[in-house]
Length: 317
Image (cartoon, rainbow, N blue to C red):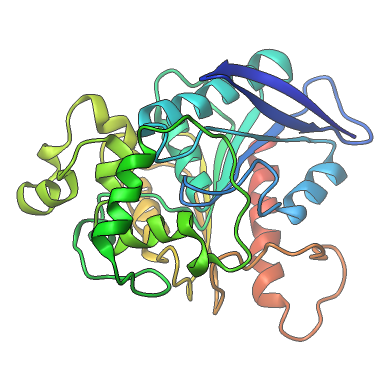
């Protein structure tokens, strides 16, 4: 059964959270709170639904929840992160104090940033599914690396992004059926191509170029919570589970590799599952049977997901 709640009212928007309760659950059963993907520019709380994760929660008596958040570029990154933190706190106060913070793609980034933030209650674990984790990494600070296809009129696309920063906030945008033909997806493409994603995330023009030239000292103290891979990982960080396809051409596999390596060096309990030959969104399917026999070619999808669930079970016990 799914029930929708409003967890926050801001900028004239009622931010919602869908709570899917299992058929039976214990009083202190955990909640998996999931944030959707879409580069922080696209998507809604039900976009790219991880049915495999919802089904796993249902079988184990866990609650599954998914929250909306405001989107770039209308809303600054710090305020988007605050939405994620507020969603976690709402779950903590209203459903259970045993929370797993999860997210896919850009939602994986939000899950990581919220987990690392001091205003967030410590979760049982963090789960990132092909997370877009670090916008200060090489991919995002050096121009000339198109996403999906090149953008021809870069100046016009960048002007549209600048204009949108002055527009009213939104908390959802249906993911386009033909992304390269969509104007909003074009903004994402040009920010990758021109290496200006960090600039829009922080609303600090030229930040990516300064990071490339000067290093991470170019990031202000205020904005460092938006770069959790660089500034938020520490000893005692909550147990972390990462799963990523090694053929991902949208969010590079190296994003999760870098997080796993950094956490391992800190002695954090980290589990990194590699989905061999899989691309972005490899597990976004209506039906993935994690409990039956595999047909030919399915094991590359089901095996890492089974291991993810096993890791979650371990941290819930």
